[in-house]
Amino acid sequence: MDITGKKILVCDDSVLARKQLMDAVKEIATGATFIEGKNGAEAVELYKNDKPDLVFMDIVMPEKDGTTALSEIRDYDDNATIIIVSSVGTQDLLKKAIQLGAKDFIQKPFEKNQIKEIIELRLGGK
Image (cartoon, rainbow, N blue to C red; front, side, top):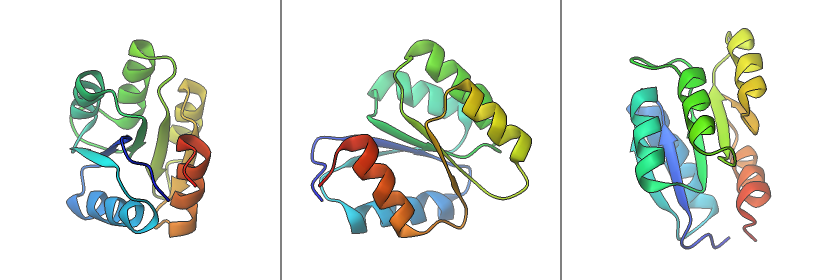
């Protein structure tokens, strides 16, 4: 699938989680530019600077959590496409994220087909 010219922001405090997600996208699609953030504060700053087409973001992160970052990004750009990627045990936070405008949720550990479906749906990749 070709998503040349699309920018994807991957924000997670775990280097391994960021790498796994980027590797999954690279295996499914080609041409994307990746932007990496390690906390919610960086996610907001990077979103404003780079205006990515798609954001994959964890909920539980230092400095600024994912729900706060999600709210700030959506205040800046109501059309932001943010996908929450988080582990079990964050049900209340997940509900809050959906209420704040997250477009979807993927539970860690994720399956590559979940990433493929998100990219096809949100970026129109073929």
